[in-house]
Image (spheres, one colour):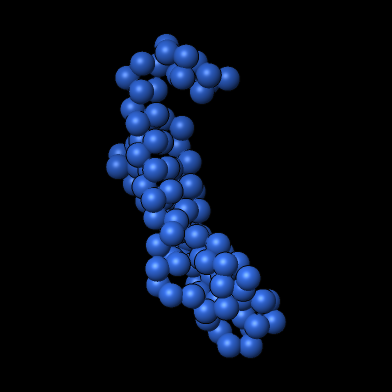
Length: 108
Protein backbone atom coordinates (compact mmCIF):
# COMPACT_ATOMS: atom_id res chain seq x y z
CA UNK A 1 0.00 0.00 0.00
CA UNK A 2 2.84 2.42 0.80
CA UNK A 3 4.38 1.94 -2.65
CA UNK A 4 1.08 2.69 -4.36
CA UNK A 5 0.50 5.72 -2.19
CA UNK A 6 4.00 6.97 -2.97
CA UNK A 7 3.59 6.38 -6.71
CA UNK A 8 0.30 8.29 -6.65
CA UNK A 9 1.92 11.11 -4.71
CA UNK A 10 4.78 11.36 -7.20
CA UNK A 11 2.31 12.04 -9.99
CA UNK A 12 2.88 15.66 -8.98
CA UNK A 13 4.25 16.18 -12.49
CA UNK A 14 0.64 16.40 -13.70
CA UNK A 15 0.13 19.39 -11.41
CA UNK A 16 3.05 21.13 -13.13
CA UNK A 17 1.20 21.15 -16.40
CA UNK A 18 -2.12 21.97 -14.79
CA UNK A 19 -0.75 25.16 -13.30
CA UNK A 20 1.23 26.05 -16.43
CA UNK A 21 -1.63 25.72 -18.91
CA UNK A 22 -4.15 27.46 -16.68
CA UNK A 23 -2.08 30.64 -16.38
CA UNK A 24 -4.08 32.23 -19.20
CA UNK A 25 -7.46 31.65 -20.78
CA UNK A 26 -6.60 32.50 -24.36
CA UNK A 27 -2.90 32.95 -25.02
CA UNK A 28 -0.58 30.04 -25.62
CA UNK A 29 2.19 29.21 -23.18
CA UNK A 30 4.59 29.78 -26.07
CA UNK A 31 3.55 33.42 -26.42
CA UNK A 32 2.90 34.07 -22.74
CA UNK A 33 6.09 32.48 -21.47
CA UNK A 34 7.18 31.48 -17.98
CA UNK A 35 8.16 34.87 -16.57
CA UNK A 36 6.49 34.40 -13.19
CA UNK A 37 9.47 33.39 -11.06
CA UNK A 38 7.31 32.81 -7.99
CA UNK A 39 5.30 30.25 -9.92
CA UNK A 40 8.48 28.63 -11.26
CA UNK A 41 9.88 28.44 -7.73
CA UNK A 42 6.64 26.94 -6.40
CA UNK A 43 6.75 24.19 -9.05
CA UNK A 44 10.29 23.30 -8.00
CA UNK A 45 9.38 23.55 -4.31
CA UNK A 46 6.39 21.24 -4.79
CA UNK A 47 8.63 18.70 -6.46
CA UNK A 48 11.27 18.99 -3.74
CA UNK A 49 8.63 18.33 -1.06
CA UNK A 50 7.50 15.23 -2.95
CA UNK A 51 11.10 13.96 -3.18
CA UNK A 52 11.72 14.62 0.52
CA UNK A 53 8.52 12.95 1.66
CA UNK A 54 9.12 9.86 -0.46
CA UNK A 55 12.88 9.36 -0.11
CA UNK A 56 13.94 10.65 3.34
CA UNK A 57 14.24 7.65 5.68
CA UNK A 58 12.17 7.96 8.80
CA UNK A 59 9.96 10.69 7.39
CA UNK A 60 8.61 8.44 4.68
CA UNK A 61 7.94 5.70 7.24
CA UNK A 62 6.18 8.13 9.58
CA UNK A 63 3.95 9.27 6.72
CA UNK A 64 3.50 5.68 5.45
CA UNK A 65 5.33 6.30 2.20
CA UNK A 66 7.89 4.05 0.60
CA UNK A 67 10.67 4.68 -1.86
CA UNK A 68 9.67 4.16 -5.48
CA UNK A 69 11.59 3.67 -8.70
CA UNK A 70 12.06 6.38 -11.27
CA UNK A 71 9.31 4.83 -13.36
CA UNK A 72 6.75 5.84 -10.74
CA UNK A 73 7.54 9.46 -11.52
CA UNK A 74 6.75 8.79 -15.17
CA UNK A 75 3.20 7.54 -14.57
CA UNK A 76 1.84 11.07 -14.79
CA UNK A 77 3.66 11.95 -18.01
CA UNK A 78 0.86 10.78 -20.38
CA UNK A 79 -1.61 12.99 -18.48
CA UNK A 80 0.96 15.80 -18.54
CA UNK A 81 1.09 15.56 -22.34
CA UNK A 82 -2.68 15.21 -22.67
CA UNK A 83 -3.34 18.35 -20.61
CA UNK A 84 -0.81 20.33 -22.60
CA UNK A 85 -2.14 19.30 -26.03
CA UNK A 86 -5.79 19.71 -25.00
CA UNK A 87 -5.34 23.18 -23.53
CA UNK A 88 -3.20 24.47 -26.38
CA UNK A 89 -5.76 23.24 -28.93
CA UNK A 90 -8.61 24.73 -26.92
CA UNK A 91 -6.84 28.09 -26.72
CA UNK A 92 -6.13 27.98 -30.45
CA UNK A 93 -9.83 27.45 -31.18
CA UNK A 94 -10.82 30.26 -28.83
CA UNK A 95 -8.33 32.66 -30.43
CA UNK A 96 -9.34 31.79 -33.99
CA UNK A 97 -13.09 31.48 -33.41
CA UNK A 98 -14.02 33.83 -30.53
CA UNK A 99 -17.73 33.65 -31.45
CA UNK A 100 -17.82 29.85 -31.23
CA UNK A 101 -19.60 28.15 -28.33
CA UNK A 102 -16.23 27.52 -26.73
CA UNK A 103 -15.21 31.18 -26.95
CA UNK A 104 -18.57 32.41 -25.70
CA UNK A 105 -18.64 29.95 -22.80
CA UNK A 106 -15.13 30.99 -21.85
CA UNK A 107 -16.10 34.63 -21.48
CA UNK A 108 -19.01 34.02 -19.11
